[in-house]
Image 1 (cartoon, one colour):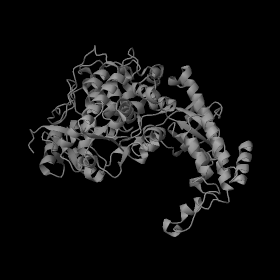
Image 2 (cartoon, each protein chain N blue to C red):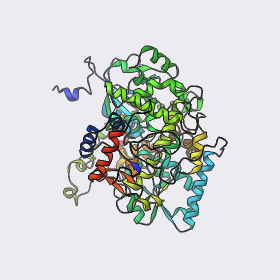
Image 3 (cartoon, one colour):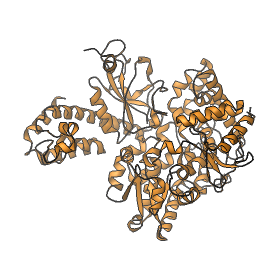
Image 4 (tube, rainbow over the protein chains, first blue to last red):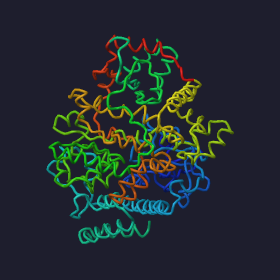
Length: 228
Length: 412
C-alpha cells in the first residue's frame, strides 16, 4: 500500500526510513532523536511539554553526524516556514505538532547554546535530556503495555461510542482500583515529575500499591522495562 | 466625522474578508505614503502604532495621546529593583482588597501572569487572597501545569475565560488584573522571532553583510554594538514578504522606526534596545487598552478601561524599563533568558528550575481573553470620547481616505 501523503512521514526524499527528533525553541537545539516511531516521539514531546515547549520533526535519515548522543549540539538552520497560523512556531503553542525537515543541510552543528554555557544552566540542560530519555523509554513501555492490556475495555469504547450508548455499563482501563488505570497514572507522573528520581520513586510506589490487583500487567510492565 | 477630528486610537487590521475589502478599497485611493501605512498591518498586526513621547512617528490623521498613556520622563538615576516594584504593585492590590474590592487575574500560564500570581500570593494573606479569582482556560493549564497544580487548583475560584468576556467579569463584580503591557517593558515578540531565526534571515543577504552579521550574532543585547549594525537583518525581518515591494517596505519601516528612536528621550543602543524602544513607545497604548476595546461587550469603553488593572502599567515599571537595558535584566543572549528579571522573581518564589531555564514566551492572549473576530471586524479606532469607529459609517471611511490620500513618506 503506497500513499504519498502518509509515506512522507515515514520515508525521506532519498527513499530511506525517516528518523524523528524533538526540537526545543528554548535552547534552539535537538533534545532527542528517535529511530522508530513518530507517534511515540509525539507522545514523549507532549509529556515533556510541562517543562519545555517543543516540536516533533520527521527527519531525513542522512542527517550528517547527528544522533541521540550529540543532538544537543545541533540546531535547525532556517525556521522561516515553520508557523502556526500567522505566528511562528516559536511563539505559539506549548504542546508539540509534527512537522517535516526534508533537507539534511537544514540541520547543522552549533555547539552549546549561548544562554546555557554557565555550569548551572548546562547541568539543567543535561538533566532535561536525561529526563527526556527516561520519558521516551517509558512511552515505549506504556505503548506495548497498553497494546497487550486485554482488560482495557474503556479506552477504545470511550473513543468510539457515545456517552448515551455507554450509559448504564461500567468500563475499566485495567483490573486495579486506579480510576484512570495504571498506564494513565504513570503518564501523569511523567508529565508532572520534576526529576527522574522523583518520577521513578512515584512510579515504584504506584506499582507497589496495585501489584496484587494486576499482577500480570505488572509482570509485563517489568519485562518491557528491562527489555526496552 | 470631520477631517480635522482627532483620534485616540487607530487600528488597521486585515484579517477578515470584510477588513480586506475595506482596506483594499481605501488603499487604492491612497498616496504611496498612505499605501505604506496600511501595509504596516501586513507585518505589525494590527497596526495601532502611536507615539507617546517626543519620538517622531507620524500618523496620517491627527492622533492624540490618551491621558495616562504618556511615557514618564526618562530618569537615568532611577534605581528601584524589579522585585521591589513588583512587591509594591502587589501591595497596591492588597490595599484595594482591604477596601472591599474583588479582583480576577487573567492567567495565561505564561511568564507575566505567573509573576503576577506569585507576587499576589507572596504579599497577600490567605484571607485577602479569597478576594482574588483566576480567569483562565485549559490552555492556561497546559502552558504551565505545575503552577496550576501546586498554586491554583482547589485554592481559587476559577472563571472560564473561553465562556466569559472580560466585561462579564466586571459585571460579576471583579476588577480584571491583566499582565499588560509586559512585552513593552521587556522587549517584544518581533525581537524574539528574529533572534530565533537569525541564520535563516541572514542567509539571503550578501556574503559580506552576512559575514559581519555572523560576527555579532551574540551581541544582541550589548551596549557596544549599535543596532544600526543589524540594519539589513532588521529590514529583512520587517519585510512583509520576499517580493521586491515587500523588501523595500522593510527598509522604509526600518527608517521610520529609526527616526522615532533617534527622537525619543531615552537612550537606545543595542539590537534588543531597537525593538524594546519602538514597542515601548509605539505599541504600549494598544496593549493597555485593547482589553477594554475588543474583549468587552457590555461595559462602556472608558468605564471598562478604568476598571482594568494592567499590572505593568505603572510609572515605576516604565522607569525601570528605561534604565535597565543591556544589563541582562531583559534578555541575555537568546529567548531562553528573555524577561530574565521576571524569571528570577518567579524562581525566587517557587524554585522551579524547569520554568526558569526553559519557559519560552508564547503569544497567549487567546488563552485568557474571549473574542469574536466578527465583532471586532469593522472597528478602525476610537475617537477622543472613546466612541468606537466603524468603517461601515461612510463619514469614517471618508475620513480615512482623506488622510491616507495626503500622507507622505517624510522620514527618509
